Length: 155
Image 1: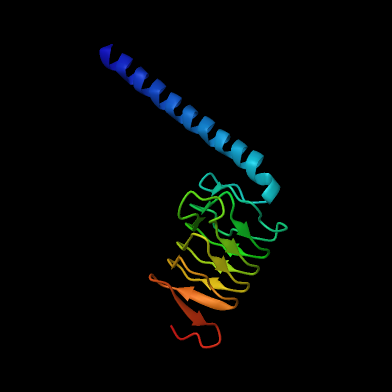
Image 2 (image 1 turned 30 degrees about the vertical axis):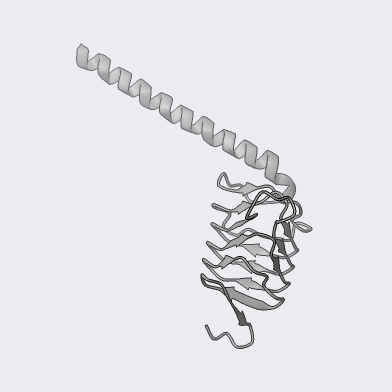
């Protein structure tokens, strides 16, 4: 009888745990729909966004896992931002947020910090830490960051 009672308690605990996990999952989807629907961002509970502008809904986030975008970041149109990207401020000053131009591609794991301007048609390589401006049509790679001309592509 003692074993049967313990077994029932274990089963009830497991059922309660799974019920709690399902409620948490539903809550995360609810908040994803409620807050991110206006930007047409795919549902994700790993996306932290506090963006000033996201363009006219043409910016895409193909793998929106672990993306953090500061509240006053300006992102142009037709940009692509991959997973684990952080775009934010280097201190607590309101005006020190990055400005991302149009048609910019930001690959996985990139970090863009501070008052930097990423020019139109630029590419930020995977894992690159951007602390300086990236000119229009250039590629930023590495840590420390270096600029490469798109025409030559010699890494």
